[in-house]
Image (cartoon, rainbow, N blue to C red; front, side):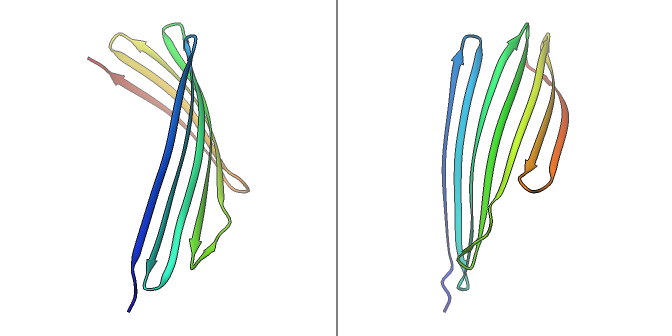
Length: 127
């Protein structure tokens, strides 16, 4: 007979501190998943942090964030080498009446691996 089981745990903490007109924020989180199916064991453990700074630029808002994540997979009780990723994001948002236009750039680099970059734009409306 086989025993099938799974467990999952999550922890997160976020703190934002106003400094004058700017806001500095720090976020940290972890999650761990473990499973047993037909006597085979596996799982994953993830941890990461992000620090960001948002500041006014006239009527607009600009921001920057730096982040780091680490993922470790486990198979049959053996933990593999972690995958570590560092990220950077920059963005700028300008209000035009009830509409806000945002532009941003993001980059993520896997340590000893590939780098990906993204450029994006967004229009939102509030009423």
